[in-house]
Length: 193
Image (tube, rainbow, N blue to C red; front, side, top):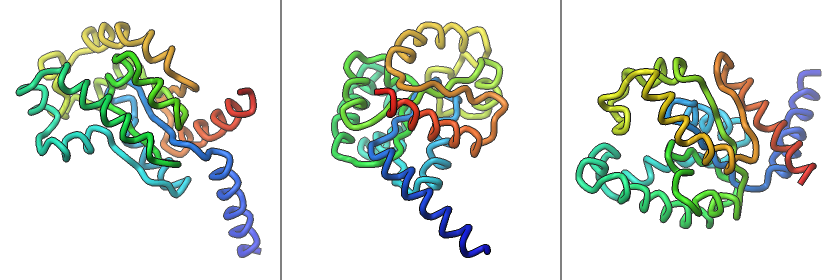
């Protein structure tokens, strides 16, 4: 009986993989869960996982804070846009984007050419808890508080919402719950579009 269940699970995985035959771009504010959920989706869907910030850091041979410090945010945003253009060559990848990627006009268009955009959200307290020990967040460097996070999230809200194909709240949910919700909402989104 166990063997039959394994076969059913393999069939289900293949069906889901064939339905979601595009790149999945995870966007959202820093600390919303993009990296963690990218790992989960990558494992569930057996797909390549790409961390945009890691890719940029490798190419530049610098950390993201070093890029910000030496060249500034505008330079970094150019690197993000160029990376998105390069990623259009990928197929069926799970791509975790930097928190500000949707701020630049045109970036959402690059993502939508070969994928769907999943907006991950969390409240400012959850975000603060998730990022407070991390010094790799140059924009939050001297602003580790919910007021600043709320203010910055509000500035980006319109960009996030206009870019998103689907929206997933990550507060108080585990990785599997979030991944399952993403898969089911993407399937539903694709049926309607």
